[in-house]
Image 1 (cartoon, rainbow, N blue to C red):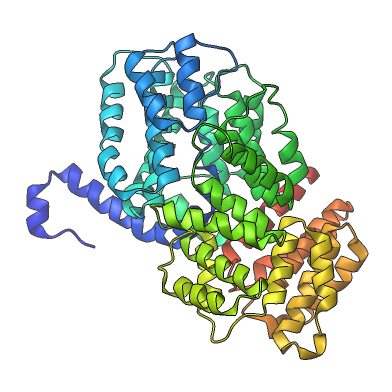
Image 2 (cartoon, rainbow, N blue to C red; image 1 turned 60 degrees about the horizontal axis):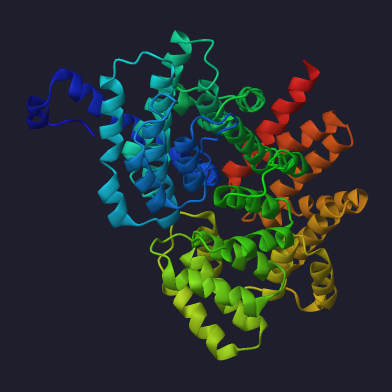
Amino acid sequence: MLLTKSLKKRLSRKEAEELQQKHNSFLMFQNILKWVDVFVYPFLVLFLPHTAQSQTSDFDAIYKTTLDLDFKKSSSLLKQFPEVEIPFGHLYIANLNDVLELIFSENEDRYNQLKQNEDTRLDLISDSEDDSPYKDFVKGEIKLQWAFVKLKFGHTLSGVWSLRNAYKTVQDNIEKNPDFKLHYKTMGLLQVIFGAVPDNQQWILNVLGLEGDVQNGLAHLKSLSKESTPFSVEARLISSMIESYLLEEHDRALEGLNSNTSNHISMAEVYITSLILMKSHNAQAASQMLKEAIERPEPSPLLFEYLLAEALFQGGNYNEAKTHYLVYINRFEGRNQLKDSRMKVAMCEYFLGKNISFKNYWEEAKQTKGATSEADKNADAILEAKSFPNFRLLQIRYAIDGGYYKLASRTINKIDTGKLKFDEVHELTYRKARLSHLTNSYDQALMLYNEVISNTEALSDSYFAPNSYLQMGYIKMEENDNEQAKIYFNKVLEFRKHPYKNSLDSKAKIALAAIDALND
């Protein structure tokens, strides 16, 4: 977009240049936006102040209700106690309250009501005569939080610009206050996000003046998590998410979550822990935690219903899973996961032998407009295929994802391989490889992964071959054969196109960087 002459006349030169720069940034960032949106989603609720050292009883009360996602009560307490001892802490919590409400509700009307609060709070901070390092720290956090919210609601241009502004604000604060440690929480997360962007898209970040490094970002967060600051637990939670979602180090991630000695686990901690448990193939533990949270007297986010349904579905508890999917479908005001939920309800009916209702729900799922979540995109690919999928293979896939390995093994044994199509034979081999890998049968896993990659040309439209290389690399790292691991990780990067290219390329890139760091 080139600015028109009439528009230029209405704008100052500085305003016109900034608008043009925003648009150019938007065009360049579109190439990586899809990846960024998928990656940051689990991190959206991690901006949680934690009183490792209690500030005031007022702050503690507001903090507790915010952490329990009780937005109305938290807002009420903020009106009663508008000041807390942390500089600009009241604005931070007020902003956090808005952001968490919007992330969990996805309510467009509520977004339109609350979005002006960002500029209002930033103006209040800018107008303050307080010159403490907290000034730019809180400004950077507010910009970062709203960047994620804007991206989630589809406001791409303003979201990208807020992300860039957050980075620049924190960067300036580091230069002015190098001994102030809290800014490494914001910068640490930004470094991880930008550092995980695939190499062929890093030039876009360079044009925008953004830099990333996963290992440095994680090191900053881990260092901060050991400090006695109000944000140490938050840094530890973010570190755990990075270890699980990017580094595939699930055990280490869960270790970082076991430091809460309180009898009360907040709703936010339930959310984060359940995500990591499910990512680490332990849906059974996640389902127990989510059930207990939903049964509490205080309200829980509707997203918990969806996550619980997912955990139950993976374990073959189809009647119970269907109940929770339907609660989510009937009450959720946003768009994400609705297509996937309706498809999973249809699959529950299929596995329960209810053919008529299966077909009705399947058609309803097809008619549901998909959203930006990875679950909806995956559901869309399954629903738009020319024929029904092989539901037994899907059952194996979901059982393995949830850590229900006995269910997966039993289902594998029931399959008549003579009736499988060509591509289904290779998918079954891939699923067997994943099952062997996750049950620590590494030799068997390597043999099966090799069988998958020997048919790479026949699997050109799937992620089975590149992910097989990735998993073989992880096995070799586990066996301390880093040279062979590097060969496998580099093979991942050679694939030009597949459904999870950005995600798998990022993981391979991070693993290669970790190996290089060991050799330095």
